[in-house]
Image (cartoon, rainbow, N blue to C red):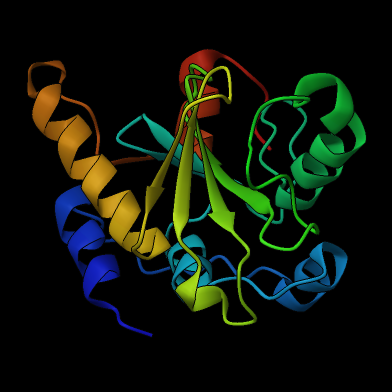
Length: 184
């Protein structure tokens, strides 16, 4: 795994915390029926639940009552309602486990963008990033890793909104405290 994008994210966010957030990746991957990209798993364990630039959140193997962050739950829900919600969207990909189907890994809090992998090979480190807009009819494809995409989005958001003093990363505990919600 190439750590340069993770190192750039750490530098951009000013992240200095050293605690790790271990997740049961084996159980998650078994439920999803596929392995997940190594850089995504490393990023998740370094930062844990929260938001990059208060703009991009990761779906993780966790479930909190007030934040829909669980990657397995979100995938299962998407599959269950796919015919109702996505009858014409997400094409030509469809949803994982369809060959080449999409598996969602990230979101924006306003619901404007969703981030997916196109599960196109047995090597998850080669999956492209697909970004869908709110109505799922406009899909942008990027041939780079998850962490490269997070870094590029984060750098862009922090640059465009520098006057708002956005944090590089805000933890789930900080989000819940700010929003007056119970802590996970």
